[in-house]
Image (cartoon, rainbow, N blue to C red; front, side):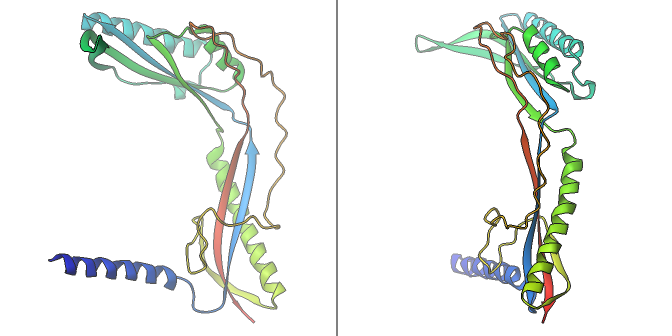
Length: 256
């Protein structure tokens, strides 16, 4: 197959794909509407990630020290009520360690590393854990993240609310133009990119969008934790809020 034939084939495939997308719209009169539902929630899971590493000219010594550090961190997770089913520890990683000194690569020994993480159910336990650890070149706090434990259930509820909102929007539009809905053609949680020229993420929020009021954030102490590293750096740890939203795009068939 020569280059000219290949180009013709590629252009034909692109044309067929574009035609299929446009032709997926119904030929009869229809309405394309979007439903949206949102919630603002307070995270209830606080995930702490720790990286351990030890370097020694004796590989077994580096391994022994890394394992001892890991055992201590795992015990600290348990002592400060980390959720048991969230505690994770990677297998040991072993590799040579080099450093550049006076523009020369110098062998420093064998580096043994391990990553650990766990989630806490409240800020108090998270702060107490952070107050106990002391970071160094051997023990590093690599991240603190938050999540909402009931997110999957909430997203299913939001999808149902967004679908209902899209149905109400379609009914209102049809009534305003003296038309009636005769059926549902398609429904999806992915924004269409049809001949309308509307891409995902560019849909404006309509006046009828369902936006339940955000629940009041619980009162909590958001003071700084005790120093958690060798440099005396104090980090302010607080829950904040997370916005969770779901969109539904529906095509309804109509007639006058």
